[in-house]
Image 1 (cartoon, one colour):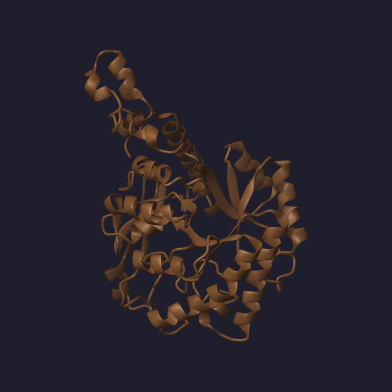
Image 2 (tube, helix red, strand yellow; image 1 turned 120 degrees about the horizontal axis):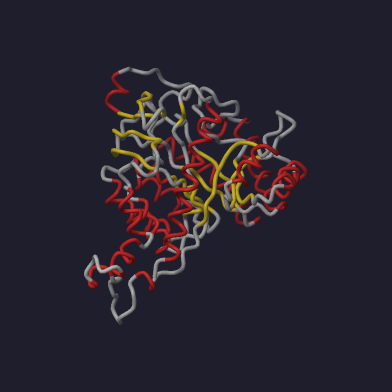
Length: 382
């Protein structure tokens, strides 16, 4: 979305009409059937500004509080590396830091099922379908659900990936930033080796997903804690990549996923950037995708991220105001479906030479302001 479009959303058009520079018919909101304004028929916008990062510390809590972020996803520090879930005491320690800095924690990340490549994963039992490790890890995930319930955390976030977040190379971005690029044909041409998972076809991948959900969803139901899965990033053709068929990298796959072991506590960490990467024409296709999952209340969190390009060929991790996806257009759809959770920036471009953490944090500050501005503008539209 460019600067002119942003100002058109925030009321500049109405101001121009008042000054006589626009015909009244063009400046006035269009009427819906019955004479009411079309946007007035929508529910109030309930989406809020969020963010995610590793462990909550005094430093990170103070940083997030500085920008007025409404709520965060973070993780407690697990003091015993052999224990694959936090205790209630560790969760309470995290929340004590949050309360000190007036930060609200609504989601936490799982110790298991991260977005890392399976070759780097320390606890790969669930994704490799390897016993007895898989059973131990599933029990730990169940215990994490219980500690969330005991400490008032509403949502537990996780991934079901073997390849992790796959990118091809870095390319220069705006100013002194760098963006990541993905092109499937170019990546395959490099002939990368198989991972330790070997060849995993769609049938095998779905079996592993079903086994996990069959043991986890009943516990989520019992304790009323939502489990939010991130789509596989990015989608791949059916022939896969490095021997893996990324079954959660298509819309049909994600629809099948949320329909398995159907539950109001089983849904998505809906990464708008990743979903855009799975579509050939993201700006045109995304609204109906949001409507499909949003109307079924399967969107538990949103990574509000932009790309340029589409499926199999895109530049990712760019600033939200310069990609192909119109954030104003998407925000209206989130409002339409009654989405009431967080909109989080994600994968902010990094600054060369600034260090991976604080270089990205500087850019996240820009994205906080951008997203909050859109939310405030949409709330005041009538």
